[in-house]
Length: 192
Image (cartoon, rainbow, N blue to C red; front, top):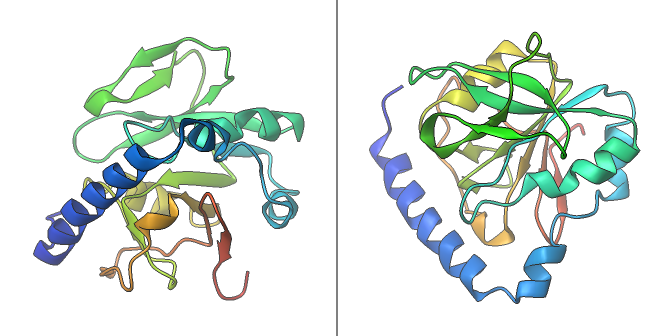
């Protein structure tokens, strides 16, 4: 997927804004962010079996902090494994006590000891979002491809509130998120 110039410009500005916001956070506020699953989201996860998280890099919203509560709900956790530079990715079962191994692009993933799992819920990182539930990702198309491969999975984006934009450009292949969780609110798309 080639990167749209508008998306590339927005992505650069969004990263800078996110970096400045996270740097300005009180350390305690940062440690407490994303530790709790709001009850509306917990209700939406009631029929799920497997939730794909991600390990937040740098100043990304730390999705891994949701792991203890998701485990307490009886859900199986998984992390993405980037397979190649062409946008291929799958999910491997994971527990917070598992050792992680280095992957492509600075990612980490569990040891591939079994078959990849099929997630019912995919929690995705993002660079920016809007109220139409459009997601601006890193630009590699990994989550676009995963969303297309698992169209019935609940798509949740996790971000800092400062990552919201008036409008995020959407391409025909971009699937909107169902839910966005920030440190201050839960945003649900139409029909959710």
